[in-house]
Length: 245
Image (cartoon, rainbow, N blue to C red; front, side, top):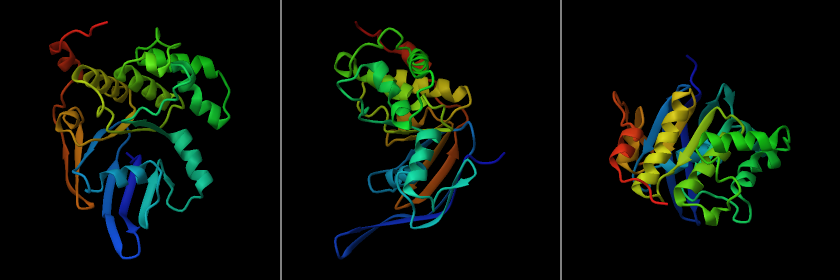
């Protein structure tokens, strides 16, 4: 099987002022196969956030090669990188990144608005919200939704363009235990349907729900292990108190 993500010898150095350099990535090799659910872990300064930015085409490495779905992206122009981000990658962030003046449906439609793709925009956004269990909350603005519901809107938005990869950065970092379990259940569900999901997290409890855990330290991959029996988020939900209205 051809890897969806192929990184070889990825290096990235940041210059902080005139005299300070930070070697964030020091020769990272990583393959991710289609349909994997991968956690990237590591302490602050380990390089996991820089690796996420490279994988998400938000930054380019100083050296090394990165192929996404067979396309070498390291030398592409900013416009072509933006096109790949819009078509091939769905992003989910810790802070949700929803526009407060728009309701849930309008927030989900945004990738199609920015991408100039108006085909069935409303129908596709409705379907995405129904997929994450928010069919009854489409007209609500972010301030009228719980943190977990806002993150579901963000996931629906990430899925709208049917991306090859869903990249989530600390997706449960602002959520309580029940909301976290609900979000992890959604990621496991979309992964079970064949979607490739990469979660960046510092929480072992979150990583334990993934089939593979990649640990970063000092800009390199310190370990890469397969998880024989990942935790099931639906099992955790069954043990938690019922949500209150």
